Amino acid sequence: MNRFKLYALMMIAVVMGACSDWLNLEPENGITVDDFWQSEQDVHAAVMGCYASLLGGSTHPMAEAVFNWGELRADMVAPYRAIISDYFQINQSEITPDNGLVRWNGAYFTINLCNTVMEKAPGVLDMDAAFSGEKLSQYRGEMLGLRALMYFYLVRTFGEVPLNLVATTSDSRVERQAKASQTDLYNQILADLEEAARLIPRSYSSVEENKGRLTWYTIKTIQADVYLWLDKFDEAAEACDAVIDSEQFSLVSGVDRDAWFRRLFVDGNSPEGIFEIQFSQERLNPYFNWFSSTGGANYRANVETMEYLFPVNIMALPEDADIRSDGAAYRSSDSYSIWKYLGADRFTAKPSNEATSNWIVYRYADVLLMKAEALANLNKGAQAQELIERVRKRGNAPSDTRVTATDQHSLTTYIVDERAREFAFEGKRWFDLLRNAKRNNYQRQDLITDMVLRSSPPEKLESALSKYQDPRFHYFPIHKDEIEAGFPLLEQNSFYVVSE
Image (cartoon, rainbow, N blue to C red):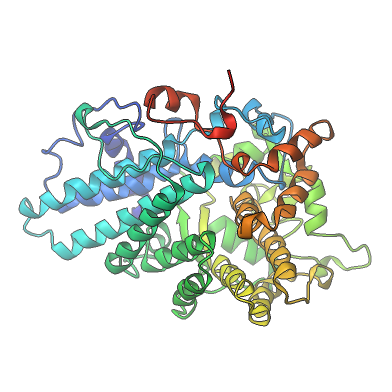
């Protein structure tokens, strides 16, 4: 295991004493008291702990949330043998505030760790003569970027959430907060990213750190994503160009299908990766047990959606198939298992003790397709098509899934479908559908309607269609425990308020 992973995993046990759920604080003496923050080594350890907090766990399940929030509401995942009741609720469009999957404590846990570092680290300059202001600024840039990413997940998932910019390190610092508006949340996210871009380095000392820590290129990628959500298409394209023009990233070749799969999804940290949550033998990812029959198999790929995205041509040769389909995103001969996190290669499953696949937050293909989306909305359809084709060519996408039109409506559907093929089960599907559907006062509500038609059980279809017509239902409720802890300032998302 590389030193970056080892250091992060060692320090998370220490740093996690810094705080607990921001609404239910039980501070511990130790890491947050002044006698910890004595040297640059202490600050570095705390920063690594912030990254390690993304690995998830029972009290801070961010690694679980990035999949659950981005996939379970959409149409690519279906319940399977060991279905859990919380997901069954979501699948049935019967989401309630007591659903365990709507907890936000993982994101706020990481946010508070970042706030703690930014508050405590400046004092170390007076304690350690070897600790430079330049190094402190670098760490601050990383923490601002990571905090912005967490709030970006929260605002897309819950709509409005509390905005906490100070460290909660003792009982006296606990503040019950009302929700901030989406406008205020996005303004803070952009402000954090703008400052981070001025402070953060372009590279570190190893490939693992370049992929597992935020860099300037990660910040630009997040900015592009945020701008798309705000319909700021010129700014989104400009942020994408900063990454593209750097020539620091490239698509992993798909000529050798097995090598492509191993390099991108098994080994990880490929030339395509921009930011990846780093799992290892010492800290296995949670996804293997969710998708494997040996682990119970909570979920599998939705067969109807797979057939829509990857239509089968019985006249085509196997080598003509889209490399992202059977044997990559899913495996039809294994009951349509979600293969990206199970396969050692395109045909053989890993043993459970080798579930080390990283969670890819962003990769270069994402930047290309985000720019294509921006260009499509700037009425530059021909340029958007060129970028889509680059991704499709690498994926060996067959002609029967190609769209040649360059009008905005056709391209929007095409890009949403292409992103589903390219990023299947990478936590992006629901966000892609919502972002594109809601533009221009939900001009593309049909994207969500089609999703519901493919994913809802027949007996729940009418109810689901009705609920998804209401934009308030497009965001999760705040978990009842948070409402009770934050009462009376914290108000429930209005769709989920039961009239008395």
